Length: 449
Figure (tube, rainbow, N blue to C red):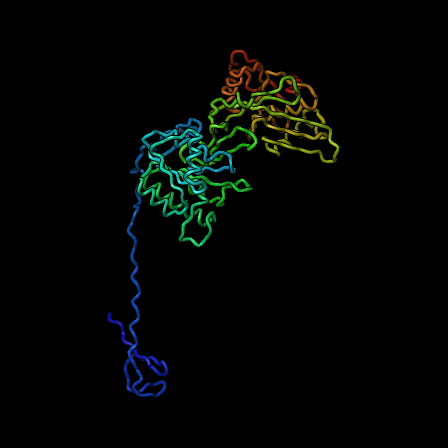
């Protein structure tokens, strides 16, 4: 359809659809001129369709392609190794060892894998010095010291690496965004571009994310929903041991943990955490008991220490490190009501040695026995361990994977173990391990102290 011609008066601006000698508005002669044609509205162009829906039955059932990082503890937490085309987020406090672990992994991965290491916090010279200290000498390790996301994408397209390390995502920025690097918009945009490129090109991306004072990855939580796997590095900066834990894993379990020791040469794997956690355990001292908890498929022994002192305040103090604070209050109340101990008149301090966090109810009985031992100022037997959940009525309840726990306790040379009486006759005691069956918390205290 042909566009309709319009005329307007150059003197008064009157508009009309046909030309006239005299303007109907201002009555002036020969002032009507043809108006310029309005630009045509741009036709909407549909983008090229990139994805088509498919039936579930037609989807490929082949398993994901995994490869080993060369570090057994890291492979355990990842679920058996890293997955091609996935993006893994490493979180942790500053100085905990995130960059050290990733650089060591770069040196341990198969030599034929091409790696691009993007460092936004260190110069090339600083990274080279750290790699020399860690003993990382790899031919196919490329380093890019930059923070522009366009430079990162260009380097990925040029090198076509199998593995990309971004250290850290808070330093990378997109010039098209009018916000500062590290802001929520920048972090989300840069992470999205890396994720889309990883899915299309098939490389594995390891992204380092800083943790703020509240313990959350800066961003704040947008990165956790975008990535395939979220790993947290935990540990006290004053201690040498580090625990790697999976908070999210689309390709494996989130129950496994990896244990490392920080030494001069970097992070060293700890294949037997139980021996490490019990190293230097005092003998013949009140207020200590050994618990056995399950971290995924791995039983780990940990020492629970307790100290009770008469309180000089109306409200006694309660301090817990490694044991849930509310759980400690619950156990103290059960000891007061069902165990016959006046612990509510004492300040209570509970600590799990080694920086391990015991969030499993199986550690209840060991914690209660440690508290009772400190209250009575009587040491428990040196070769005694305890496994069981404590109920509000003072009963001792069974826990899962008890056979695995007892096997680990016997392997480390313990002679006695306190367990719930309800499973009597359901399992066979390992050689050299005496089982002490108890029904209630009061009975457990009387049989051990």
